[in-house]
Length: 246
Length: 55
Image (cartoon, rainbow over all chains, first blue to last red; front, side, top):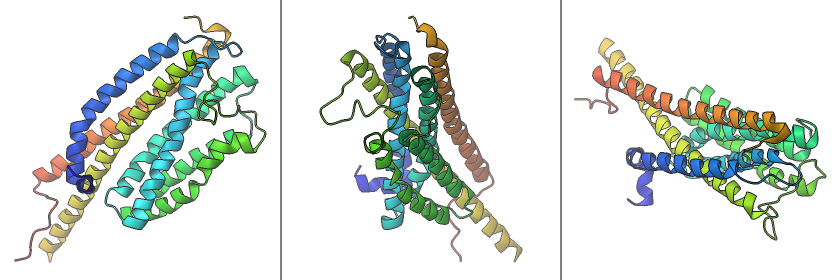
């Protein structure tokens, strides 16, 4: 199957139906390994066992940002190329990205209380992630309140591209400003500063979260294609009924 | 496995993450079932995705 064939929703659905069971199995397997490794990872010499929250918090933060990057690519597809699956991909990614960002915010607060002594501070990293969550809610509102899907998709695509400015701000906020949040310790020039006994479970959990995101995104795209089919069928039904009356 | 003096925070973090992920999975699964059911109902009533050609 050529990549261009995936522009056809029917072929895309056939591919998703084939791939989804394998993705579900792979996600469950990698999560099982990741959670086992996370449970038996050694305590941090400063933070103690609270370092276990990192195995959720960091992957959720990465996926929260990745969701917006996927939506930005989809927004370009909607506005520039008018790809038939682009706004389907954007709309399906929004609630999933929002959920991962929410996990990041809540686990961050629960990690912050024992390590910093506070659940929340208005520093650049925390505030920019909160803005990302609010932007997700805004995009979801635009998609879900538009009566005509195409109009909602264009408005959401514009907001998505404007909101993409926030992604490098989140990433570099800890370098640009003096924040309570620690600077990057994994994705940084010079390599990770985290010990391998903690880094390996973290990367496995990041893999599990990524697989979960891909699985949920493909399943949500399938649902969105079906929802649009329902809409088309209802419009045709209404058209047939009105023709029968005249 | 000893979670130390801050066990409540660790357990709460994992519980919240599990709840949010479970809610996402439930949303996707229930939405799929709902869309399939609606399409099935419409097809039973003879509604298709193709407009009939005018004679």
